[in-house]
Length: 198
Image (cartoon, rainbow, N blue to C red; front, side, top):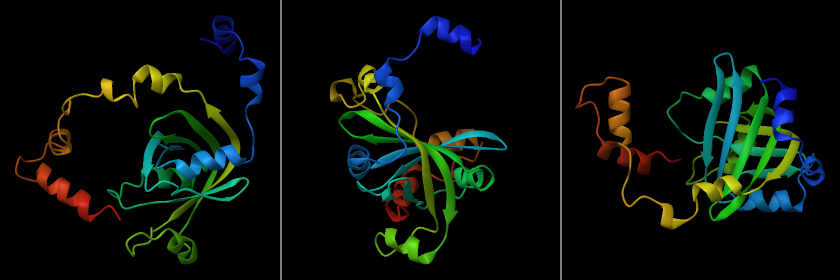
């Protein structure tokens, strides 16, 4: 569909929705970021788009000033898809989430990666500093209504499954990568979770 066909179908946003976009982190934005233990970062690179979850104790993303965020990068599987994307294309989008709060905060901006020890050491946990910190300069900031999380029952325990509805990470990695059955197991993955969070 063309942009005009979509507008003909959906119409236009209300004046309030159209004007809610801001370019600085006001006290509401800062409160959301300070209470958020989880943010999803979207990046774009030569191989397309990528989404990367980031999680830490609440307030792990630091508001450096009215337009700038600092986000530590914790140990993972070393694919570093998002970081490699940022190295080639600085455009990023962030979605901040808070358990039990249906509304979210969206931030679009430009990112750069630093390995400056003075900056990385500010985010040390258990004596371990992140290897890099991503600095995001915001260009668009706005809150997003809670309809999607409410429809999903995301924070409603009554909608949660009684038991895990999908295979374990071990089973999925084993099957996707076509690994021998005895290469690893879920117990080893659980042990890794405990020893390699930071």
